[in-house]
Length: 322
Image (cartoon, rainbow, N blue to C red):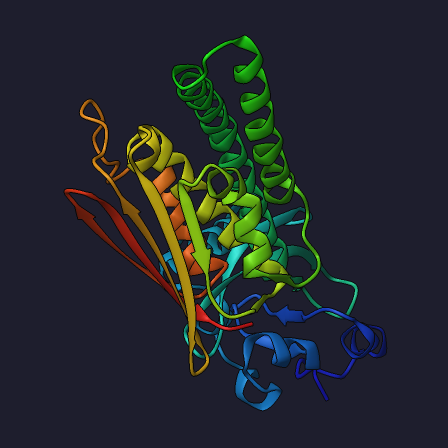
């Protein structure tokens, strides 16, 4: 039985037994009188544990509990309903203490012999995480477009300064832009397959390697799809900053990128060598740095250490192998 309110009503019991999502029934005292198996899966409390308990004590986070109780009393006293018969998104509380987002709709009913409240709930953690991820990608994409324009401008200026005539400028500039475009395709595309670190690095630094301004190397290691996107963003941001502020803002600098496997952890070291531009300061904050931190944590489940030296940045990434 999942209902403990008077005589068991067959219609309501059918709702609890057949619902694909959590269904919770509460009486006018705020006590749990109905709790299906999906509710147990979602919130961690068994029917025997939840039965007769105050609903707000079980699944309403402490910060929202007073508001829940006040709204409940207001409805019972005045009939004013702010959440009934609506679909809302709100935080819920699991038995283990963690909060997670749910979609909630509550209806008041007197069809089953007395007034009660039936709540239909759905865990939307995956949806919320995906929405947050998409928002972060959109923000990063906007940021990257601005950076891309800066990189193109820097490439044009550096190529012009080292070109004897328009013909050589056009040839060199076009080649570097093509390499940059290939890297950008991988960075903005949806990557759904494993990719080798070497292939990803070639996309990002290929033009600089061809120009003798970069080198990379390490064992052949494959990245999972989520890791590819995250590491792409990180390397692109490091490369952009190197062009704007670091070793690649003049012709004397270079980048060394090495990676290795230590047990189940990948260690990747980005090392800039050369005197940074006199007018530029290394960025220690801003969206780009926050984006790197978010990608390291969310996409790679790893850590990053930065060492801002006088001759350039050394950034060390450590994350689990795919």
